[in-house]
Amino acid sequence: MRVIELFKEITQIPRCSGTHQPFIEYLQEFAKINNYICKIDGAKNILIFKANGNPAICLQSHYDIVCLDDGKIPEIIEVDGYLKAKNSTLGADNGIGCAYMLALIEERADVEYLFTCDEEIGLIGANGIEFELKSSYMLNLDSEDEGEICVGCAGGVDIFATNNNDKLIPNDDNKKLYEITLDNLDGGHSGVDIDKNIPNALKLIARSIKECAGELLDISGGERINSIPKSTKAIIVSNTAPLLTHKNMIVKQLDTSTEHYKKIDENVLNFLYTFANGVRGYDKELGVVLSSINLAIVTNELDGVQIQLSARSMDNDELKIITDETTALLQCFSFEVTTSGKYPAWKPTYSKFTSKVLGIYKKYNKEASVEAIHAGLECAIFKEKYPNMQICSIGPNIYFPHSHREECEISSVHNVYKVIQDIISAV
Image (cartoon, rainbow, N blue to C red; front, side, top):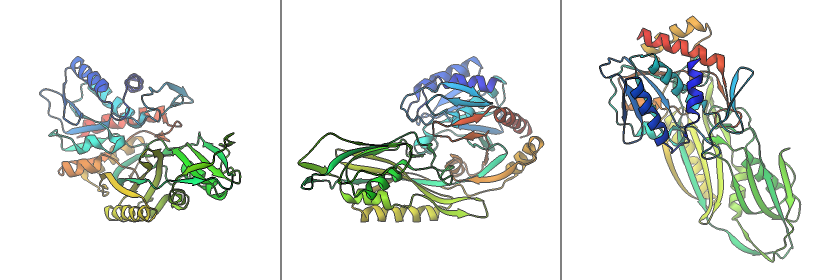
């Protein structure tokens, strides 16, 4: 199938968030070969369209991918009907959406094709978009469940906290140094996977340190602010060897003695240990998580310990509450706090376009339904920027995005492509 071929082709192009030029150059050449116009705006978004076209619909995907290892190009393999990658994220989020659009360009479909940048690090491209779109409808291709038509999503805020209150302590009790390492946990998307009881590496290591009455000297862990952390490492002093809180945890006593040690403020460990990570509210009517917060990254920098968290909610008022509460809590633990990357919730909206998409989908899948998801979609921003545009989102089955376990069902890619083709023909 051409969509799969194109997906494999673009995985070889560097597309980690923040990297733009290689894919821009690829699309410029691709548009030229297929006699389309290609425009780039100041935010590095890309719009492709026919010179004399009359498009009714805009297809939209973001072209950046989550790279847990910076700059790593996915090595794609096929296993039992699934696309996977060797020791990296797959990039099906949102590379499959981009591949759909490329295949339709080759089919000469009269559509506006909008490729946005840096979605994974704060919906930056969508927020900075400069294009005036002609279309009455937008079909976002960033959903990850076949048969579901998304008409609502969570908003989010990134929270950043710094504590620089470490102290030099005499080692009067001759405490021992230990290195604790935890790696190769499952990880996952901090929105759609937050209710799946995936272990959080930062919470596990904090528990191990706290339960042996350890004092924290160094810590680093987590991969991306929108991922559930799968690895972390810490160095502590303690009179008692740390207990294992996960089968993947390794504890090593360091063959070093010290008369003094630089202790990280105990408030840092107390916060990591006591913080209520995960789901904070559930919407029974929508059948989806209402609010959540993910403890994502901890680093020990020259200017102090840095903590990054990601808050989400389907309701903008609830999002403000969880952000304000977390900020106040961090301040009680002696952190300085800032927030950024805020994007609004997309209130579930059922439009005529949604009804049309649902009718088409049910021809292929009788179980097709309208849903909302607990993850951020650019649709929320586009609904504000293009208020007269009717928008919904679909996509194939993609499991465990933002992790090394990410996989995409090949048959589902085929099925959704047929739906997209019919939607284009129907509008």
